[in-house]
Image (cartoon, rainbow, N blue to C red; front, top):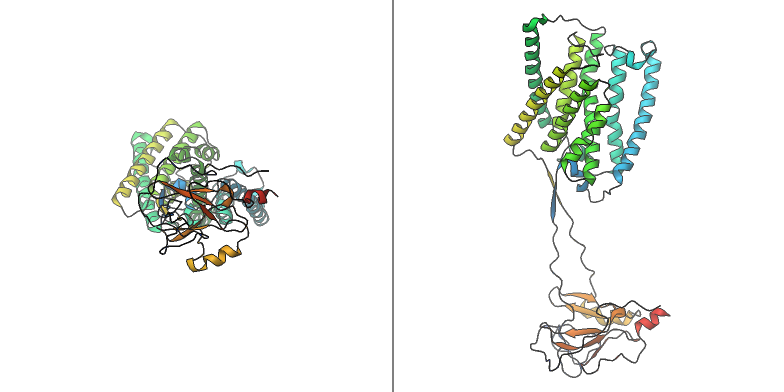
Length: 446
């Protein structure tokens, strides 16, 4: 089998009357007689031999790329396109194991409370409350453990572009969401009273003390877990493949909606909230604003259920609920956007420094070159000095002989590295034939 021919595998014939026009720094070629000054080489006929290969451009010290939150998987250069899929499988497996263990614990500790259909139970029963909200909260360790297995690194990229939870920003968003809910709900209760609804009567749910403890501990974890899955893992998985943020914001919405057993109006309200949390996550560069809105919403609704102002078991809605949800989410969205503009120090993107391309291999120093050539029995024995970078370049012998030209282009001669003795030869322009010794290609084919 013969070696494939390369574009430079045959020497270029000299042009009629072409002569070298200048003496440029050249290269030292092993086997050439009458060497001149350091870095120059002269053939036996006295002709000047410049470098046969153009100097490469400067090596970049590294470039940068900037990513929004949904594209943060690309900030880890070791991350691959298939890894989010495997991460999801691992996360589901961990969640199933934790759910089974959690169910066993609940069944043995509270057997009387869980003797009927889970969907027909009273959500204000502390045991049912713990089961419903706690089972969702188990997604939090499942996602984090799956992310630890495959990345991307660091782990905190799932929370924000800063690689961690920005606690001060989270508290700010919690305050903004709480203010919006207090004002809007107060206005809603006031309008209901003025239209003949009467003064609402407070009635504490049974096990109110236990409900308060669960309300303070489990509900925030449940909201954080859902944000970590739908606005974190799913958004970054989609962003790994699709660049525009709309895909990462909208595609997880149907899955989030299907996880809530409401009628069509209730599902629309949930969808509006899901889109809002996706938008603020993208705009702020992290999950904090979405976690704040989700947490305040669930804590307000459950608190109203604990004191008799809302029915936690109700699954139907109305068009007025959709209007109410639009006002709530629109107000919160406007406040968050305003806060982001007021805080230029808040990072909403992450800039990474890409590693520079690998440096070319270093060839032997000038004083070690003869020994290296003598020890090379493969035929690849031509080490050509780049006069700009002062590094050596390899001329593959299977693609020789090489046409040698000076810096301005005039033809000088032929450099043939395909000799059995491992010593390249420089032929004058008139002698462009193959050397009589066996070629490297012939030996290689044997």
